[in-house]
Image (cartoon, helix red, strand yellow):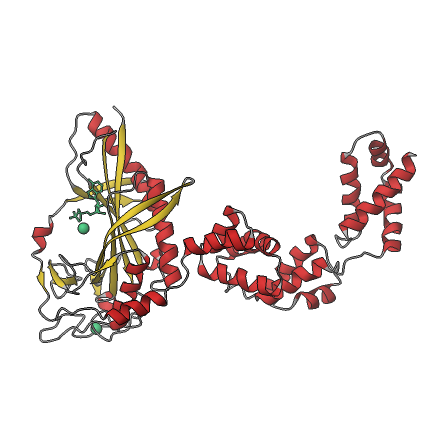
Length: 479
Ligand code: ADP
Ligand code: MG
Ligand code: ZN
């Protein structure tokens, strides 16, 4: 029997507000445990929540960017459950009237574009964090995270492979980062993803029972967990098993999923309207304002880069994957209007430095203006491309301008023809065998000779001039 995969994703996102969703406590990450909590976020009797306006605006912004309709009435509900990290015994969430619904996100996966429907985007609050020290028998609780505003983004079961899920998450993160509504940092827990997956007979219109996967801490982890789970479910079915709805945890170390609990139904949460937050009609002017202030989103920017700068799809998508990189690129182009050359440097040398040092392009500390003057120096013949790479490295380490580095290190290109002729003459004398080979028809020998000249000049020779003189000299010798 042939099977097909059905996947739906639930993403939880910390909204990047300075204060919590319903109180004034700070949301700053990594502070002393319980230094950022108050009666409201700890649910002490008599405390009352007040909605954070900024969080609401961020939520609307994300919902609009995901093409969602905004609910006419904003209403919050209590989701009731008991857990030590939840002192109120309920979470403020949204149940039957999510903030927004019926959106979509277009995902480019394997050369084709696919619309993934977004079922709902709603607001809720995070719970605290349990800490289990390695030594001792006690567990500790930190309420700094309680009440941090969350956005939950739920897709329809429209994804049909682990790779597609990965691509959806990548596209979603790009949009959210462009909007600056979240830092989307999975390591800090500001983006978390639960993946729902089922398999069914190919072509069947009925959904199989789904398994919810939790505990993945990277997009790659999500993809790996889904890959594993597909095999597990198919093998289980082939052996005559029947899949029941359950929640499983991804164990990244061993590369397996482990059953955690048979899933509760939403009835179990006894949702009811939050009586302490009055439902309200969102201000139309506010929504229009957010819509008008919407930045150019990654997909639109990519299309513009293709058209306006004539870049390849690969380069344009690399440059637009983060707003910061795209901004940097466009600033460079202002100073040095050769988009292709700049793109090559950003996607090539600069990208490798960033990877190596694990930095963002701004953190590299080299201004677009300095990149532009580096490239101008190549055009002016002051340095060649190979030396420019060295200069870039030096710019990153020292922060000084390319002109100064070239002066200080004596890297100016030798394009003095007389001096190059002298050096080339020497090289030809020392490499009589290569000269013979070249004249005898071995064209590779030419590259060897160029290499020798470059070595003699410590890479500072102008390749164009060297090529020209060498060709002329070799021609003289063969005739
Ligand atoms: P629950 O009520 O258990 O949270 P939902 O119907 O709200 O379930 O769906 C939660 C997520 O699971 C959604 O992203 C949805 O697309 C996905 N989903 C629902 N049914 C299936 C299924 N049979 N296979 C894969 N994903 C599914
Ligand atoms: Mg759900
Ligand atoms: Zn608080």
